[in-house]
Length: 158
Image 1: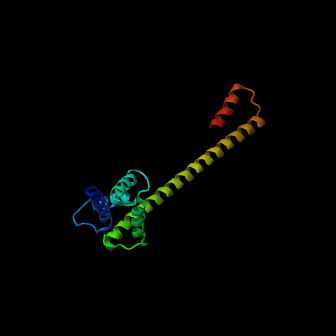
Image 2: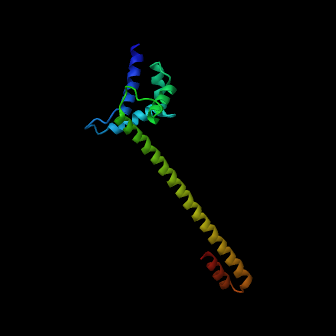
Image 3: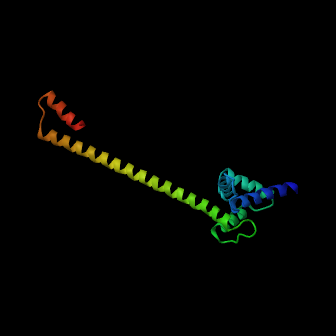
């Protein structure tokens, strides 16, 4: 029974860290809030595994716990007695910041891919121009000396 209460207390503390207002003078409150958010909402990885272990040990359904926290964050469930509006706003800011970071990363990835495609298209077009020029030179000028062949190749490789 004591073990069950210990794990329940850890989960309650994580919820409090996520949903209570910032403690004045505590520099790492945001870090605690982010860790609590990860612990309570992760779908995979070490945080999700720990939440599942702790919730089961506390006699809770880990998926229900995650869904309940997300419902509070989204405004679909009441805050009840675990926090206040200021803490909830700070927790929602973490979600907004992370979504913005994901969007920035996605935009950067799209821009990088677009730039890569432009460079590839430019290289292909340049290669096609060189090959067309070489074909044109080959049909226009039948080189008669070794030096003329070298000049044509130099222009091609240009």
